[in-house]
Length: 194
Image (cartoon, rainbow, N blue to C red; front, side):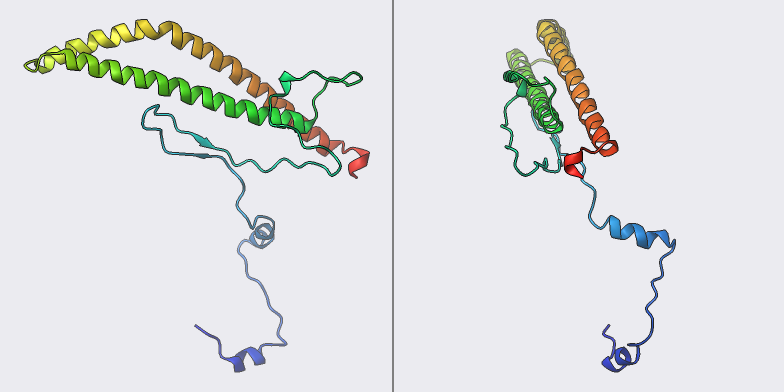
């Protein structure tokens, strides 16, 4: 609905008053005009049944005059002489993001491979049954197949689980270092940045 021009002209000198209930809503809206970044979970993969995470990381800020870091694992490289041996916030953050992606890839690939082999073996067992097999015969064959599959895959699954737990612990430690460095930089800003 359009407001007639004559009314707008008559309102020109009047003060405009915002009505927000509660009043704090007006103030907070100005600061949070855009949605906060957050990770999203995608639909499950049809084979691995894993739901990939779509990370919504803000780009890492690189101060002017510094070189952009390479996208490889920082543990592959030695520190130069005279270095303190400590990684900067950007290095830790980059290593955290790379490690997180590598863990997601390990997880997806393991379950994709495992489920692909599982479904092929299951179809092989069902295909080897005669067409006259009853539902009970199929159930018994699948029961035996499941038992054999778990015993056959135990070593591989245990190795995967150990690797996943180790990498997950490393990612938690990296995440803690990144968050601690961010907190430290907020509490004690460096003289160059002020």
